[in-house]
Amino acid sequence: MPRLAPYLDALRARYGTPRPSEPGTTLEPVLRAIVSAGATPKAAEKALHTMKVFGLLDPARIRELDPDTIAMAIKPVGGAHAKAVRLKTFVAWFVDRFGGDVERLRALPPHQLREELLGIGGMGPETADAILLEGLGVPAAVADTYAYRVLTRHEILGEEAGYDDVKDAIEKGLAGDAAALLKFRALLGRVGREYCRPKARCEECPLRPLLPPGR
Figure (cartoon, rainbow, N blue to C red):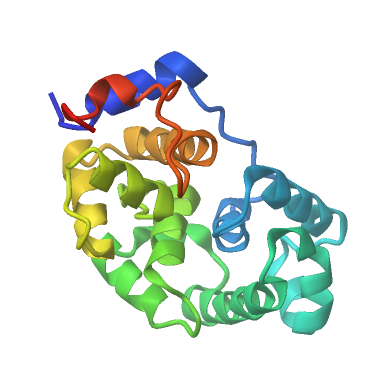
Protein backbone atom coordinates (compact mmCIF):
# COMPACT_ATOMS: atom_id res chain seq x y z
CA MET A 1 0.00 0.00 0.00
CA PRO A 2 1.35 3.48 -0.83
CA ARG A 3 2.61 5.17 2.32
CA LEU A 4 0.16 8.07 2.24
CA ALA A 5 -2.90 5.96 1.40
CA PRO A 6 -3.95 5.76 5.10
CA TYR A 7 -3.82 9.57 5.25
CA LEU A 8 -6.07 9.90 2.22
CA ASP A 9 -8.44 7.28 3.66
CA ALA A 10 -8.64 9.14 6.99
CA LEU A 11 -9.33 12.45 5.25
CA ARG A 12 -12.03 10.95 3.04
CA ALA A 13 -13.63 9.29 6.05
CA ARG A 14 -13.98 12.70 7.72
CA TYR A 15 -14.75 14.94 4.76
CA GLY A 16 -15.94 12.67 1.99
CA THR A 17 -14.64 12.76 -1.57
CA PRO A 18 -14.21 16.32 -2.90
CA ARG A 19 -16.26 17.14 -5.96
CA PRO A 20 -14.40 18.98 -8.71
CA SER A 21 -16.14 22.03 -10.11
CA GLU A 22 -17.43 21.80 -13.66
CA PRO A 23 -15.31 24.06 -15.88
CA GLY A 24 -17.00 26.36 -18.34
CA THR A 25 -14.06 26.20 -20.77
CA THR A 26 -11.11 23.85 -21.26
CA LEU A 27 -8.76 26.60 -20.08
CA GLU A 28 -10.72 27.42 -16.91
CA PRO A 29 -8.99 24.79 -14.67
CA VAL A 30 -5.59 26.17 -15.67
CA LEU A 31 -6.59 29.78 -14.97
CA ARG A 32 -8.18 28.65 -11.70
CA ALA A 33 -4.86 27.11 -10.63
CA ILE A 34 -3.09 30.44 -11.19
CA VAL A 35 -5.72 32.55 -9.44
CA SER A 36 -6.23 30.15 -6.52
CA ALA A 37 -2.60 29.94 -5.38
CA GLY A 38 -2.50 30.69 -1.65
CA ALA A 39 -6.20 31.63 -1.54
CA THR A 40 -9.06 30.07 0.38
CA PRO A 41 -11.56 28.10 -1.71
CA LYS A 42 -14.26 30.68 -0.94
CA ALA A 43 -12.09 33.57 -2.16
CA ALA A 44 -11.07 31.62 -5.25
CA GLU A 45 -14.71 30.89 -6.13
CA LYS A 46 -15.61 34.57 -5.82
CA ALA A 47 -12.76 35.54 -8.13
CA LEU A 48 -13.63 32.84 -10.67
CA HIS A 49 -17.28 33.89 -10.66
CA THR A 50 -16.30 37.48 -11.46
CA MET A 51 -13.93 36.29 -14.17
CA LYS A 52 -16.77 34.35 -15.79
CA VAL A 53 -19.13 37.32 -15.59
CA PHE A 54 -16.61 39.59 -17.35
CA GLY A 55 -15.46 37.02 -19.91
CA LEU A 56 -12.01 36.60 -18.39
CA LEU A 57 -11.83 32.90 -19.18
CA ASP A 58 -11.13 33.93 -22.77
CA PRO A 59 -7.40 34.30 -23.54
CA ALA A 60 -8.10 37.09 -26.02
CA ARG A 61 -9.96 39.07 -23.36
CA ILE A 62 -7.13 38.64 -20.85
CA ARG A 63 -4.60 39.81 -23.43
CA GLU A 64 -6.50 42.97 -24.28
CA LEU A 65 -7.10 44.16 -20.71
CA ASP A 66 -4.52 45.83 -18.50
CA PRO A 67 -3.39 44.16 -15.22
CA ASP A 68 -5.19 46.73 -13.04
CA THR A 69 -8.54 45.88 -14.60
CA ILE A 70 -7.97 42.13 -14.24
CA ALA A 71 -6.81 42.65 -10.66
CA MET A 72 -10.14 44.26 -9.82
CA ALA A 73 -11.94 41.09 -10.94
CA ILE A 74 -9.78 38.74 -8.86
CA LYS A 75 -9.38 41.01 -5.83
CA PRO A 76 -10.81 38.46 -3.31
CA VAL A 77 -7.82 36.12 -3.68
CA GLY A 78 -5.17 38.56 -2.43
CA GLY A 79 -2.03 39.51 -4.32
CA ALA A 80 -4.42 40.33 -7.14
CA HIS A 81 -2.13 42.59 -9.17
CA ALA A 82 0.73 40.07 -9.20
CA LYS A 83 -1.69 37.33 -10.22
CA ALA A 84 -3.17 39.54 -12.94
CA VAL A 85 0.30 40.04 -14.39
CA ARG A 86 0.90 36.28 -14.12
CA LEU A 87 -2.35 35.57 -15.95
CA LYS A 88 -1.39 37.89 -18.78
CA THR A 89 2.13 36.45 -19.01
CA PHE A 90 0.84 32.89 -18.99
CA VAL A 91 -1.83 33.57 -21.61
CA ALA A 92 0.67 35.31 -23.92
CA TRP A 93 2.96 32.26 -23.69
CA PHE A 94 0.04 29.83 -24.09
CA VAL A 95 -1.30 31.52 -27.21
CA ASP A 96 2.09 32.16 -28.82
CA ARG A 97 3.48 28.70 -27.99
CA PHE A 98 0.39 26.51 -28.41
CA GLY A 99 -2.02 28.60 -30.44
CA GLY A 100 -4.43 28.70 -27.50
CA ASP A 101 -5.02 24.93 -27.75
CA VAL A 102 -5.15 23.18 -24.35
CA GLU A 103 -4.72 19.76 -25.96
CA ARG A 104 -1.43 20.84 -27.50
CA LEU A 105 -0.36 22.08 -24.08
CA ARG A 106 -1.35 18.79 -22.45
CA ALA A 107 0.49 16.77 -25.11
CA LEU A 108 3.89 18.14 -24.06
CA PRO A 109 5.90 15.72 -21.87
CA PRO A 110 5.18 16.65 -18.21
CA HIS A 111 8.82 17.30 -17.29
CA GLN A 112 9.30 19.62 -20.26
CA LEU A 113 6.00 21.37 -19.63
CA ARG A 114 6.93 21.99 -15.99
CA GLU A 115 10.29 23.44 -17.00
CA GLU A 116 8.62 25.76 -19.50
CA LEU A 117 6.04 26.87 -16.95
CA LEU A 118 8.81 27.68 -14.48
CA GLY A 119 10.39 29.82 -17.18
CA ILE A 120 7.34 32.11 -17.31
CA GLY A 121 7.87 35.33 -15.39
CA GLY A 122 6.54 35.14 -11.84
CA MET A 123 5.63 31.46 -12.06
CA GLY A 124 6.85 29.50 -9.02
CA PRO A 125 6.90 25.73 -8.53
CA GLU A 126 3.69 25.63 -6.48
CA THR A 127 1.67 27.37 -9.19
CA ALA A 128 3.34 25.36 -11.97
CA ASP A 129 2.51 22.09 -10.22
CA ALA A 130 -1.06 23.27 -9.54
CA ILE A 131 -1.46 23.93 -13.28
CA LEU A 132 -0.17 20.44 -14.06
CA LEU A 133 -2.33 18.65 -11.48
CA GLU A 134 -5.52 20.71 -11.25
CA GLY A 135 -5.49 22.23 -14.71
CA LEU A 136 -4.23 19.34 -16.84
CA GLY A 137 -4.61 16.16 -14.77
CA VAL A 138 -0.87 15.44 -14.72
CA PRO A 139 0.27 13.46 -11.62
CA ALA A 140 2.27 16.28 -10.04
CA ALA A 141 2.07 16.91 -6.29
CA VAL A 142 1.69 20.47 -5.04
CA ALA A 143 3.95 20.97 -2.01
CA ASP A 144 2.10 23.78 -0.28
CA THR A 145 2.33 24.92 3.34
CA TYR A 146 -0.32 22.47 4.49
CA ALA A 147 1.53 19.52 2.97
CA TYR A 148 4.79 20.63 4.59
CA ARG A 149 3.18 20.93 8.02
CA VAL A 150 1.51 17.52 7.92
CA LEU A 151 4.51 15.64 6.55
CA THR A 152 6.97 17.19 8.98
CA ARG A 153 4.71 17.01 12.04
CA HIS A 154 4.05 13.35 11.25
CA GLU A 155 7.80 12.82 10.86
CA ILE A 156 7.52 11.59 7.29
CA LEU A 157 10.04 14.34 6.50
CA GLY A 158 12.39 16.40 8.63
CA GLU A 159 11.79 20.09 9.21
CA GLU A 160 14.67 20.95 6.87
CA ALA A 161 12.73 19.50 3.91
CA GLY A 162 12.43 21.78 0.89
CA TYR A 163 9.76 22.08 -1.78
CA ASP A 164 11.11 19.26 -3.95
CA ASP A 165 11.43 16.94 -0.94
CA VAL A 166 7.76 17.42 -0.04
CA LYS A 167 6.66 17.07 -3.66
CA ASP A 168 8.64 13.86 -4.11
CA ALA A 169 7.34 12.36 -0.85
CA ILE A 170 3.71 12.97 -1.83
CA GLU A 171 4.12 11.62 -5.36
CA LYS A 172 5.83 8.46 -4.10
CA GLY A 173 3.45 8.19 -1.15
CA LEU A 174 0.45 8.08 -3.48
CA ALA A 175 2.15 6.08 -6.24
CA GLY A 176 1.89 8.89 -8.78
CA ASP A 177 -1.89 8.50 -9.04
CA ALA A 178 -3.27 11.79 -10.42
CA ALA A 179 -6.78 11.26 -9.03
CA ALA A 180 -5.42 10.43 -5.57
CA LEU A 181 -3.04 13.40 -5.67
CA LEU A 182 -5.89 15.74 -6.57
CA LYS A 183 -8.10 14.47 -3.72
CA PHE A 184 -5.18 14.57 -1.29
CA ARG A 185 -4.41 18.19 -2.13
CA ALA A 186 -8.00 19.32 -1.69
CA LEU A 187 -8.54 17.44 1.58
CA LEU A 188 -5.14 18.26 3.02
CA GLY A 189 -5.90 21.94 2.45
CA ARG A 190 -9.07 21.55 4.47
CA VAL A 191 -7.41 19.74 7.37
CA GLY A 192 -4.62 22.31 7.26
CA ARG A 193 -7.00 25.23 7.54
CA GLU A 194 -9.02 23.62 10.33
CA TYR A 195 -6.45 21.71 12.39
CA CYS A 196 -2.85 21.69 11.15
CA ARG A 197 -2.45 25.42 11.61
CA PRO A 198 0.70 27.28 12.73
CA LYS A 199 -0.42 26.29 16.24
CA ALA A 200 -1.65 22.73 15.77
CA ARG A 201 -5.10 21.68 16.96
CA CYS A 202 -4.55 17.93 17.07
CA GLU A 203 -7.33 16.88 19.46
CA GLU A 204 -10.08 16.47 16.85
CA CYS A 205 -7.93 16.20 13.72
CA PRO A 206 -8.78 13.18 11.55
CA LEU A 207 -5.04 12.54 11.11
CA ARG A 208 -4.33 12.35 14.85
CA PRO A 209 -4.37 8.50 14.92
CA LEU A 210 -1.52 8.55 12.38
CA LEU A 211 0.79 10.74 14.46
CA PRO A 212 4.02 9.07 15.63
CA PRO A 213 4.10 8.07 19.30
CA GLY A 214 4.84 11.02 21.55
CA ARG A 215 3.71 13.69 19.07
